[in-house]
Image (tube, rainbow, N blue to C red; front, side):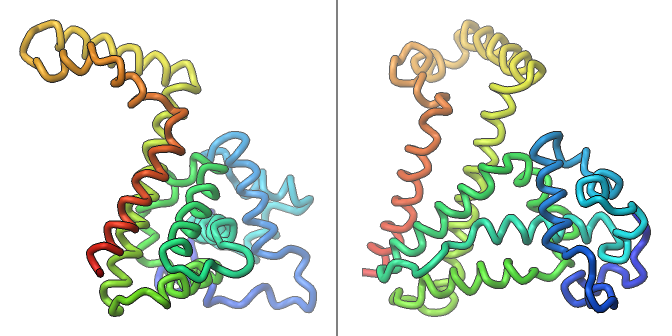
Length: 246
């Protein structure tokens, strides 16, 4: 992609749309096309040429809408946050409202399992301002805690803790999917299991050896328990915060 004339200090949201009376495409359409490509073939496959093919546009014409790959990632990130928004009213109870937001965020990223590893923590994330849906998501998060008996700093801390939990969970879910999906992932998992068994057999790890013989330990690696563990952890965090306040 071309280098931006604006540098990294001016986010795409602060720039005007193309100055035609009726732009042929919207940023939302470009983001939707990029999401479709990434869901099908991975984010590495996303290019201006492929986006143009989906939209029926000339590749160069899209550079009137976005200038850099960082711009494209910002659009995709904001589109995902739109999916994470809770439609309608939030529950009146702040604990239920916060849990609902966490579930919607998790569900949005589970629909696009590549997104957490590609978009979260990228270098540009520190310099690209939140987009419209990112701002809406933060506003909804603040609304969820409006009735909580917390000061401002404590509310922001709780939101950050829940976010850390949700995205940490999503990273583990992506690892499970990778190991159970492609042949290379399965082979890597099998190799790791063989190595672990050899280490356990050495006698140097008695607690691991006992765990390997425990019938209940097998469920820890069961991807089918991801939902159950997510709900358990979410409740422990939110209820623990509530008890601490009381």
